[in-house]
Image (cartoon, rainbow, N blue to C red; front, top):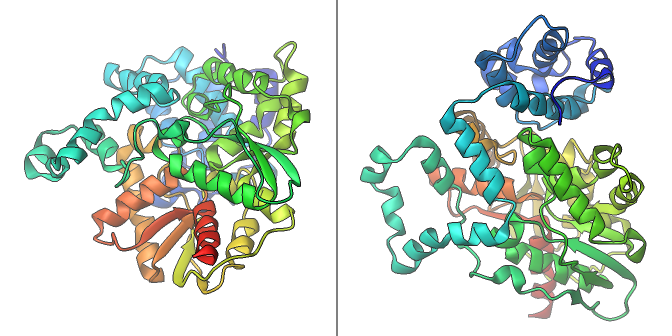
Length: 430
């Protein structure tokens, strides 16, 4: 249990030379203009706490909570500061040394107990499905609901996708999906938690695209939530437990790659070796597991791609999910894949790698800043004049889709990269 900063953490704090090159890349600094809401300022506060000169007060905790953990600062940093690790460790220390207000604590514990468990999440979504089925979902947009509902509840409901997959859709994929034609690879697919319930169609598209490219796709039933949500909220031990469960569910030697189609999950899994380094009996396996992890676009770019695509006439912008572009350094690969699709025009998106305000649980615990960043992203999408926004993370899809709806831009479709590839394959068959 992380109750204080360790010596290695302190050494990492000293890596920051306070040059300020991270400031323009930080979404909260860009919006607030406050030093304490910049990476440099937060590291200064961390060091003060580590030196015993400052306690974790509500004010200090609020500056840490406002951080999106997007790690854009790591991309900008010339000193190689591992800011993502520092903010995760700080949040773990906060949870052990700071008593949160009851409402805040309940919200965080509810998310930690609900979102990583697909069966619980499906039950929680039943009221929303019922409203949709009866045509009463418009009540959620009524003036009465707007005036009575708490801000965080409205924020949660606004993020629900327009069309939720049917109940039980997460079970549509079998344990093995055979390759189409000659089998060239054997890969495991992490179907995830929220991904499997709210984006079952994206998982299915991922499996189809991989199969089209000569992959036998294996879905180990013991694999589930990656643990990112817990780790980013400071529940370090629970995140480690989920990571261990995934590592124990699969022998990495049995597959060529472990495919992940959610940017935040991919960034987390690639850190399993580091996360579980001090765990006896599993650290070696965790490193092997992490070494096999690949974002789906990363993997498809590395192999000889099946380019039997039909035309998709559309003007599209690509949004860089933070944990794909900054944490995993996967930027060019999705664009290279999309450029192979006939009649799909990719146009530049201003601030394409600026966080949209999703950031895992962030848009639920910090809805005000999340909304500001959402509006900023939607404004850039509107300026690009596109029919389609493509990205590689489900949280970004929900956030951008909700923002487009609010702005009256519902005609702009939001799709995962692999869904676009799947459509192109289907277009060739029709």
